[in-house]
Image 1 (cartoon, helix red, strand yellow):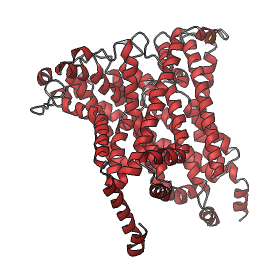
Image 2 (cartoon, rainbow over the protein chains, first blue to last red):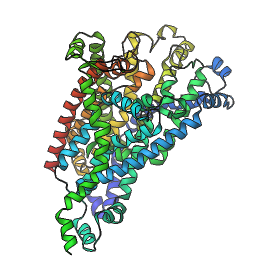
Image 3 (tube, rainbow over the protein chains, first blue to last red):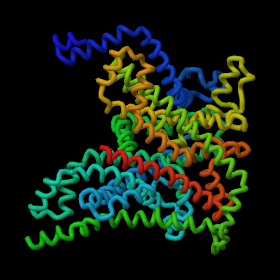
Image 4 (cartoon, chains in turn orange, brown):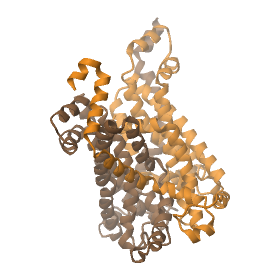
Length: 295
Length: 302
């Protein structure tokens, strides 16, 4: 390898090294085959849902779940869509998740501004309390929240769920943003102060523009996390008109869904939004989850 | 100028104004409910009227409640499917994709696999539940297929038979969890100096010995983080149980979260449910404190 560094520079050397190893290992196709098999097992349920959601019930009865549908039949999808009022559920999920992500990012930003930039006394303690607050099981706050919501008239409103998740998720956001903000260049902040900028203006015209990419990542997380939440929306949103996709899916078990094609359609419709988010945000998600876990 | 110096002198006070919305929210949504729940755990209450104080009676009853101990035992078993198996699979996959597939087939092939394995992780658990419920039920995909190929006697009631239900739910959980471990481990590997691997390579170390002597020790911080976060998650498993088995059959998949939910909203033994939640919370906080300690140690090392 050393000679190739001398002759052609680093990139070439790397390529050659890789090529060397590649040539060295005839096993690589075996490894790839095993990985493909594992991936196929992982993705097979998704594929099955798609395959059977577009199958006619009669064809399922004859050919079973593994047969390739002869023609695309959307009857079951349409049926589940109508029965579950899926457009309504989608709209509810979008409204709640979007509101939580905006409100949650805003609360996180304010908290982190005070902790990371303002170095408010006791910051570390505040942060630990916040984090412990979200790590505890939701069961331990659900009944009092349910009772409070009933007492305040917020029970069975989307607003109740929005407020609860905006607060719960801002704990992680505060943690992440105050870590980022504690390394924010002092000179920039001081320069802004010299120019007579208030804390409020500095936040919006100096800090936010720099943080924008991080805020977007955080908002994306909050959106998807809220979309996937189950217990609190299950308890808070009892009426059909207020429920989210996740709750509607969780309740299909109790309903009479003996038609397997209808079940496949339900799963398929539940999968679609996730796959769309995934295709749009794949990089953000896979990178960010790691940042969230380690940092 | 006088104004500005005054402002910076009580700077931290004006900064603390920004904590107000978060603090109010935290007090209302987390602190008061948490304290109320602890308070409720010392009472007998049906959800209406005034809670009747009963001291430690709920906790006392927990000690002899078979359902509760069963649910704790299942939590231990779910640690295997939430933590142990996904961490092992995740480590091997991460090392394979990072240290082998990337060299042999290029960056994008390795990214493609990572994305594919990650997909179940971001699916709402309830959707995963519907999907697997459809596959595992007595007339579901697996049994139809087994019968179609003549293996009728292998077909079982995967989620309706107490012998298999726990294993079936565990399989679903492993399916969900592997992606999380894989992604965190791969991110961890990317901060490791590649020259270490090249050196090991020149020494003639094969893939397995690189995994054991190099990858696992270097990934120790990530492994610790994943183990603790998934342990905490294992204590809170709820949605897959709610959707796939509802704790049954014969309580064979009952977990503390489901038991709490059941007593809060079905039997309405609110005080008793609160006591279970307090036990669960105490265990979680113990794990969380270890976690935070470790992280601040890591930070001070940096």
